[in-house]
Length: 258
Image 1 (cartoon, rainbow, N blue to C red):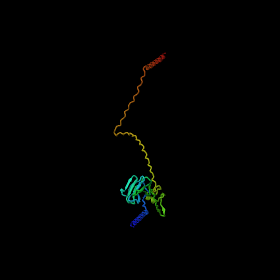
Image 2: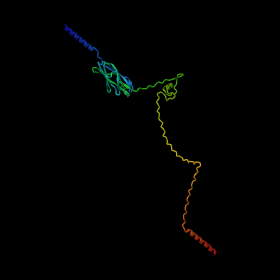
Image 3: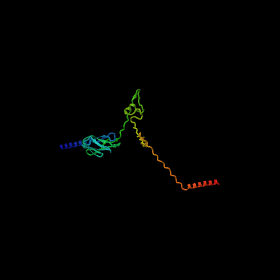
Image 4: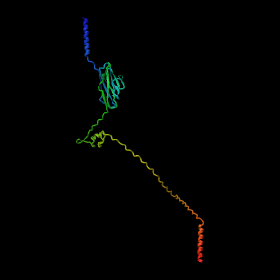
């Protein structure tokens, strides 16, 4: 009787235990990632990871986009290892942690990926955010604040759409329509310097030095010009003329006597 009772009791306990095991919900391992929508090139930002039901210990293995670099995390450095773009975080009961990353310097859309590995070495994809934009933040154009003159009229002396008071505050000229907040800076073209023309060297003019008082003025010495020597006349012509003259005189004398 006692043996039969013990057998029945043991069987009932086994059935109840099996039923409770079958009915109890199975833990759902999961991990999610939270990223900012966008960051500036080269900006350091925070990534948040939440992980649950991974057992006594687990690992979150993150793969960073190309151009991004790991900085640090809220976990102990002994719980973090890195190899190239893969960073492994070992969890010892933590349900969440954060880590910091420096974004790429090139604008664009980048994708994170990762897995949760539980104590039994089962792997699960990390959900939540996976993409992030790297973009240059735009500079908002300031809205001008107009100053109203008596009667409710806005004073804008140069008509460029900005009030005088606003231009004065922003350091622009309220009387120049080309000078207003946000106006493009004009490019200054350098004026070429003219090449210097060579200066002619003046020829010195010699000025005669006046004689000192009491100094006699030297009289210039005249050099005589030599007269040309007469060419010698050949001898004989004078005698012939003389004889001819004598003969003519003799002829005239004789003729008179006759």
